[in-house]
Image 1 (cartoon, rainbow, N blue to C red):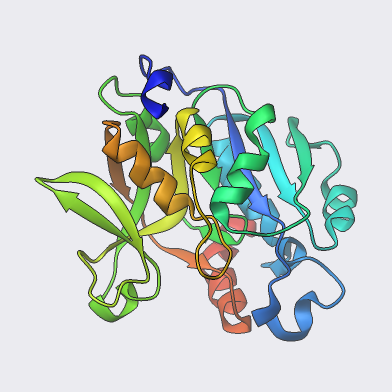
Image 2: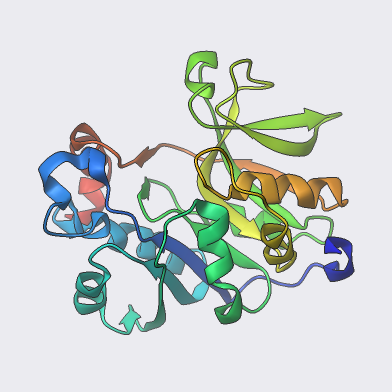
Amino acid sequence: MIDAYRKAAPEVTGMHAVIPAAGRGSRLEGLTGSQPKGLVSIADRPLLAWVFERAVEAGADALVVMIGYKGAQIVKRFGDSFRDIPITYVHQREQCGLGHAVLQAEIHVDGTFLMLNGDNVFVESLTPVVEVADREDVDAVLAVEDVSPDEATTTGVLQFEDDDVTGIVEKPTDPPSTLVTTGCYVLPEAVFEACKLLRPSAEGEYQLSEAVGLLARAGYNIATVRLGERVNVNRPADIERAGDLVRPESE
């Protein structure tokens, strides 16, 4: 039972960060033929360096990185630490959705943890997300953004009842809201039990959004934090856009 894992909300300062980075990134055309997506250059730094940077700034004291496609290159590039923060690499043999990726990290994670998608460039600090997670009345936090109704049909959309998050719907034809997930979460350990209850989608993927919905239905209080600009790096045009946003920081 998921509810058996409920406990007083712990302080999350000094937490693990789980970073799924096993995919190839086939929509990046020729850029990932000889290297993993996480090493594609954004403003003269690997994409994953920007993700690691935000995790460390937010208080992560250990990075758990899921690798797959040409993952040895990621290990070679970053080694066993980033800014003196240790990195543990977990080889994800199959990429079967974010729920599957998160579950691979279970034995390496202790307590509430930060999860960041390995292909997101966040312009602003993620510290506000962690600060909300520190509240005693909060069990999990979703970083969200407001999008157009059309865009909401292409991603994970939050469901609400009386202002409480009750679930996330993936790519709905009739979005219940225009608040969508951004690939940044603070999650309790109970999410691992929720992931074990998942069934694969028609595409064979285990959706983290469904696991979050299970937590909500089990009574976990899920808060939201609106973040500033970010870029989900999926296509060549996203590389230039992300670079333009972060370049002042890299200079």
